[in-house]
Every structure is written in C-alpha cells, then in structure tokens.
Image 1 (cartoon, rainbow, N blue to C red):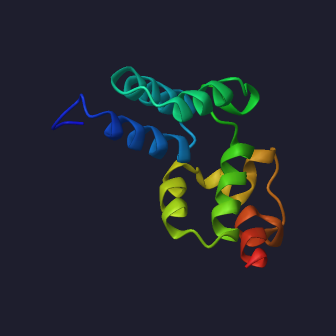
Image 2: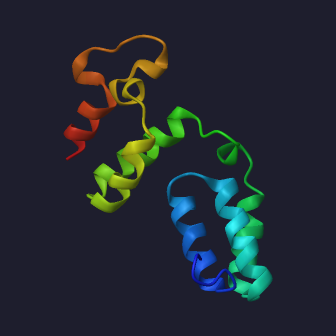
Length: 117
C-alpha cells in the first residue's frame, strides 16, 4: 500500500490479515477501500454478510473470542496464526485470570490447549 495505494488486492490482503487478527472493523474498512477500487461481487457479498454479524465484531474483541481463536490455532497446529494472535493476548488471558479468579494451573487456557495437542 505504501508503493501504490490504488492497488485493490493490497487492500484485500491487509483486510484479510486484520480480520484474522480479530480487528474486524479495521478489516472491513480495508475491504471497502479495495472494493471502491475494484468491484469484486464475491468479496462484496461476503463483506455484507460479515458486517451483519454483530456480537463478535464489536470495537473491542472480548477476551473469550481471542481465547477461542488462540485455542483454534493451537488445535489446528497453525503456527502463523498463533504468531499473529499471541501478541494480542494479555498474560491474564493466557493464565485464565480474565474469568475473575485464578484457576488451578492445569485448567488455564494454555494447559487446556496443551492437552488438545
């Protein structure tokens, strides 16, 4: 995008990366920029459906949504997705402290993910 802000596919790629990071509003803005430059009906349709899903796409992702994405990355053995998501997770989220109490060490999300394989 720094080289050519009018390159629609770069906006779509950035939108996908932001979406995978859980930054849905920023992702939608990138998709909209890309669609303004190049109208792709399949992307426009997907975006319309995704924007209609409200609970998960709030301005701030709930810790449970991020935790779900982290556990999914571990379960799927997806190192790239895990590397993108881990910097977004707080120590409290990883230890399970986001539930308001500190769980036993073997029930923290990290231990659960380890048991999942």
